[in-house]
Length: 116
Length: 115
Image (cartoon, rainbow over all chains, first blue to last red; front, top):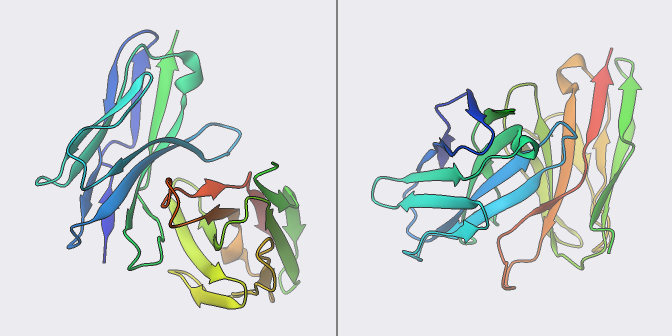
């Protein structure tokens, strides 16, 4: 069974600074997808970024980028120029390429607070 | 498009009562999912469906039932509510086979309290 581990329950960063959230996962699959979802106080789950395991290039979305290390099974999220609106719970999630019917396995989350 | 919608937003149940959480999507997605999120935890899969008429259990199915009679709707039924079912429930949908094949889109959630 796949597992996703987020070792940082809480983190804080000053506005405009950079922060990195960690995620490791365990799987025997070779093809899979990884995601970071953001959950602000509104509770809405918002997709931040996704990475396909067969792509060596790290995904980027504006101020958000990932460091995907397939051999180490590591998938960290870097937020540059942090903004107050980035304050949220961040979840790392995994799905394989169809064998599990694309079910998501989530980590327990990291609560990020951006301070003014 | 409204995306994924859920009703109600909040509900308080007494132990032993029943209710149905509604979920609908207008994106013509064939895959739909129900998750629950307990305080301080990630989401756990309750049930999922790969198309109308096809459903299967997830990680935590006990105490719940689902049906999928149409592509758009995927209701979740609680038959005998228990305090352990106090949680926030999320519905999600996806369309494997498209360019964003694996991405799940979530509804706003339903906060359920069982007293």
